[in-house]
Image 1: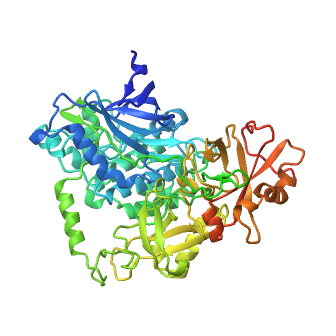
Image 2: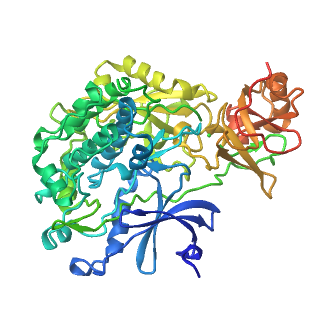
Image 3: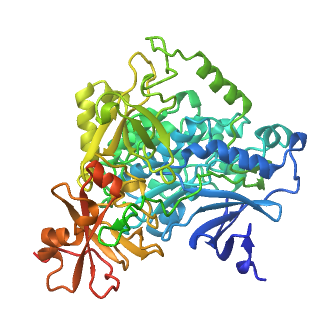
Length: 618
């Protein structure tokens, strides 16, 4: 059997090698259970199979992945589906994104990037780092090859920013530093305090981010020298030259992040503000390309506003009476992984790892035990940061899905809120964005106005959307960010919406909206499965708009297709060889008042629509 024919863990068939790095080879593989393509990373484990006390390094890796699983829905962290073992070594199963390349490859092909684009990349990477830092996870190997640039939903190259190699420590930090004299990281991107034997901290990640942004804007690392020893010495002792291509704000954030003394290094909140300012500037050395969306606010996780919406359900004219909604495409909880790299040279063994040690755990537990249930002006973070009625003990972050216990069924007053899985739990709502303390100081109405602004485009694709702003409990010196949540009146979202969806997701119509494209598969029980697909490729149907059924008739008695033909048929179907379809949610939600019909257009002969978005005939 050739290497390419090997099946990992009885499930993942290797197809071809995609590349090497980060401690092992990365392969394109076929998930033989779900029939989808994934990326599988083979981790090189050293010959020492056990750590102190007989620990299995692969077992430690799985534990660290579970610790990091709270990052599973972050839009700027590469999705990791599983960590499996095969041939006594761990393999990491990740999402496969066609057309993706790392930042180093992008700079090699395009040259130094425009200032506003670099700022957008930096803002997204910073957001991912801060999300990990709040969980006590240090990345330890931020560098251009660990920042991936993927196409956006329109197919435009390099518009999505994803931090990879995040979350697993295969070896204890004590073994790698004190027993073996190892330093974790990559030459040229390590902070001076790490080269001197100091601990990895949030500040060391920020230094590495500064070096990465310098490389992106100048095309060369500020500490790149002819030899490894010279590069390490430059990072320890040499002040970098001011980047010449960066605008003022980007130049300030890069130089601030590169401060030798971590106490003088620009902090995450200030870096975020400068990156947001820089995103709108561009560079004097040539026209700026369209910027990657920047993230604004404090160092809390906050992706750019979502712009469209995704869903699985059935057409009214073919749906069996009384059939409950079902989620067809479920994903396993995300396990975030970061493989260790061992590079010998100059007296250093250099690698990438994340490790949350016992001291950090104890500190976090102590903070939780001493937080007061009722906030006072001396409380940094309350036990219930959004108040006891909300019931949440952790800060909400964009992309998280929630259920809400509204009193009397009204979207008023503070509900009880709990976080749920976006795919497995049929969620009622989702956190679309969070707002920092600077915005919060403007008052409740300003917060609502800002949430409305950030969700305007997404709400325009939804039927009966409800915007709710969950503000922190007063009296905290370090309150969480206010959260902008979206719900549907009389219905659940059923899954992630807008930019939190991914092509290939099986979806409900409540996740979809005008402009989306879907493939449709008829199942054995006369139900239909819908898959969100890129309109740039062939597809079964394009969604064109919502219409509402009047009266109080049951769902089975309404011809949804006819409603859509009356509403959109003249513009979209007449004389074009097209057919209008109408889709609705469940019978239960119809009876509850969600009488919305989502209209789509497809070919009369049942074939695929050609690539590209259809346009109205008039």
